[in-house]
Image 1 (tube, rainbow, N blue to C red):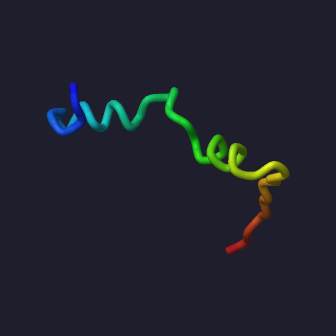
Image 2 (cartoon, helix red, strand yellow):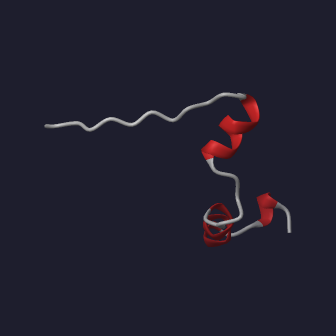
Length: 43
């Protein structure tokens, strides 16, 4: 089934598949020494 023939819900289901690459997958393939930084924020 091509994407143009898909119903809206089918597109949502496809987008939510757990096997899809995450952002860190792309970042790790682009950069060799990527370090994810975290900090605590107080509001």
